[in-house]
Amino acid sequence: MQQDVVYFSDDKRVSLTSYIQPQCNELPNQTALPALIIFPGGGYKMLSERESEPVAFSWLAKGYNVFILRYSIQEYAAFPQPMLDAFKAITHVRQQYQHYNIDPDKIALLGFSAGGHLAASVGTLWNREEYQRLAGVEGEEHKPNALVLAYPVITTDWMKLNIEANLKNILRDKFDDPKMISTVTCHRDVGTHTPPTFLFHTTEDQSVPASDSLKFAAALDDNQIPYELHIFQRGPHGISRANALTDDGTGLKIEPEVQCWGDLCSAWLDRLFEHNR
Image 1: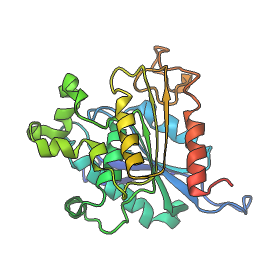
Image 2: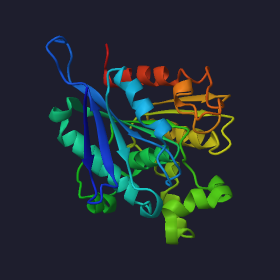
Image 3: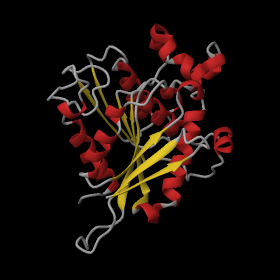
Image 4: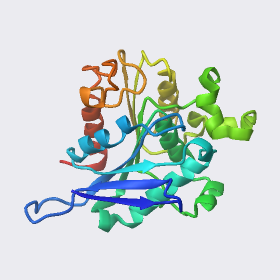
């Protein structure tokens, strides 16, 4: 395995860590692999380690080359900066596809919680020229080929209960701007340009309601975008892989019934990307 880190800011605040399976003589049938770019969650205040490397390594075993984007958070998280970070990361991976041994037409995003909001924003707003100009990208070089949204933040209505940890981190001085609130409400911008999407959530999630995933899935359905949605009953917010390796020490984030989401997702992505066939 090869590991590398690329920085997208002078202060090294924004970085892309890659975990790459290089081609080798013992695997003559191995072709360029799909890429999975992970956006950890953390309410745009921090980046969860439980949703970073422990997830990345599980996807390496599924035959994907994996990247972790550590995007802008805290005082740097004002919209659209995290999304611009993502645009640059996707463009970099696609342009360097030979170096990373990936197929440039098979790039998926995996976002958890606030990272799911970021992934959904990229998937719905990548075609907006004003954001393309800000990021210095053009065409479809920054468009993901698939989205994976894990208990994603999609709407802003429920966030009023937790303003400090959510809305203010990305809206800043535009907290009361109806147009900006609409822009960061992801399901409203789903269209035919949105890539196929896999979603999972739990009904016991007390931080981000499962209705957020349902609304995004309904918008995908309205636009005839391929999608797969799994709503599990048990499990709190931030469940990650739902096993002991990603538990937070409380034991509350271990749910055997939810652990299958990774296999369900990889089966869906494999079919979409015609991978591991």
